[in-house]
Every structure is written in structure tokens, then in C-alpha cells.
Length: 400
Image 1: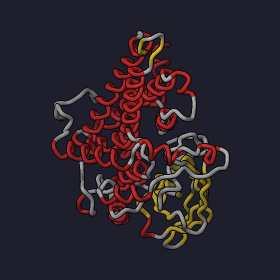
Image 2: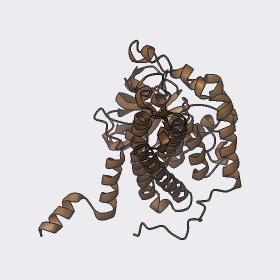
Image 3: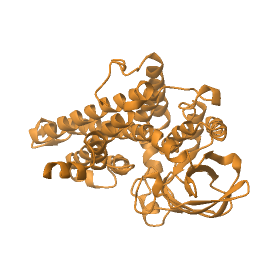
Image 4: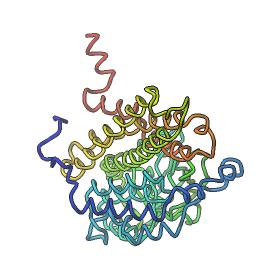
């Protein structure tokens, strides 16, 4: 199967008037309600988070406005009470959210939404309706070793009558303390099933992980004889792995959009600093040692953005090539984020290494996202396996 771009894709990635209006609405709303000053208020007490173990804060009033604007319903089909927007619209929204490093459960909920869509069961459709009404949900399926392969889940499911009983731990759950519900991948006798579990259900305990990103939280959720009713069985054991695999392109694209937005903020902020900061009676932006890294960052971010919307458009019109496109986008966005983050701190000079410098907040969000669901190296390894076959096969063919 060819993985080259097809004539099926529109030249503008399908980004039309509705998508432009959504982006402009999001940009205006976030400018008014998610200022850099407010972000620093929410993330400023780093000692409370790192030393005393307090949870990073987020503005619940702003989050209620996000729900009222329909952001959580954006990816939900109309028949389930949502808006049914295209993936390019979701990518545009998330890019603006990343540009403001907005602390919220939006990213986690959008990712879980695409898994629910893929399940396509009556129970999943019911939960999509709840998400459209404001219920927040996060995917819980990673193992202790950091594998994002769903069949590596450490949560087991035992059938007892019409219920399932869960035992085990799901690791690296994103924004676990901001959401209401976990979408859990659990291993049953017949395979991997997907279930919805309330965070407050009996037998559920959530323990915070220590991460450096102050705009979100991460945790591991442990289930001890936690009972799940048949109404909350979202995908049967015969469907769970397939459902998660089908959602991978959307998951990677959403994280890539956040990376691109955050990286763009770092670039623009550093450019403005370079125009104002003087050294040797000249602005530092006039020095080649400053200009060249900024141009390199711009080129990497633009490349990542192009691949991002290529992936989003593939999800909308060419699902058969969406995983390849999404892995390309995540690879480029992760690498661009790491480069832009390091240069933003370095080019701010001595102030760049202090807590008082705003780039720290965006730096840490980018570093977290770059690794989430696999960094650039991981994505390129997956791409190589998909396009040319496992490396062991290549080695054996060369030796022959």
C-alpha cells in the first residue's frame, strides 16, 4: 500500500470558514481568560508542587466556560449530542490551547473521546453524551515500564455475573485529578476490554506521580476488586485492542497540536526578547548566533505544523493512511518542541534559567508532551517498521 499523499486530500487540508471561526473564537477567549499572568498565578508556587506534593492548580471557572463553548463536544458525533467537527478543527483548537499552555482536562478528555467514538457500542455512545454535557474522562492503560501498547496493561478484568471486577494498576494517567472518570483498558480471559470507571468508585485509589509540568498532573490509578456494571462496558474483549489502535492517529495528532502551539509561543516570545535585549550596545537579535537558532526553530515548527494538519486531514478523509501521517506529525512536533524549548531558555540568557522566566512553564509542558505516547525516535522506529518492515528482517535480508 502506498503511503504517499493522495489526491483525496483537499489542498487546504479541509480547513474552511467554520474551522477559522473556531480558531478565532478560541484565540479571543483564551486571550481574555487565560492570560500569561493568570498562568503564572496557577503555576507560580512550584515549591508547593515539587516539595510539599500539592496538586497543580487549574481555573475551574474557565473550564466551565470551555464546556459552554462546546469544546468538549467538538469531536462527539451529532447523534450523541456533540458538534461532530472535523479533526482539523480539533487540531486548530488544541494548537491555541497549547499556545496558552492552558491547565485543564481538555486534552485528556478529547483523547478519550476518540476512543469512545471508535468503540461504537451503545454504552460508548451513552458516555459520549455525558462527555458532551461536561463529564471529563482520561485514558488509563499504560504499564509500569512506560509502554503505551494497550496489550501491556496491568489491569485485569474478571467476570462475575453481569459485572466485571478490576484489579491492578494503570500508569501514567494524564490529568487524573482533574477528570471525573477513567477509561480503562483491562485484560479479560478473552482479550482486552474497555470500561468506564468513576474516580470515586469503591476500590479505586489514585496516587500522584512526580512530574515537572506545572500545567497538568499525572498519576497511577489502582483498582482493587472494583466492580464495573455491564452498562459501563464500552468495548468487548474482542474489540478493545482494535478500538484503541484505531484511535492512535487521533491521540497522536492531538498531542502534536499542543506541541506546535506551545513551541510557537516559545519562538515568538524569544524573538521579541531578542529584539529588546541589548548586549555590547546592540540588540542580541542582530547576532548570527541568535538569529540562526531562531530561524532553525521556525523552520522545524512550520514543518511540524504542516505535518500536523496533514495528519488531521488524513483522519478526516483518508483514514487508511492516518496512522503513518500522525506518527510523522508526532515525530516532527516532538523534535521541534525539544529544540525550541532548549533555545528559548538558552537565548534568554541568565534570566532564562530562573523560575521567574515565563519560558519555564512552556518548556516543561513541551518536554512532557514530547515524551507522551512516544518521542520522535519512538515514532520513527514505528514508521520504519510500518514502511520497510521490522529491522530484524532488514538485517537478515542484507546478510543473505
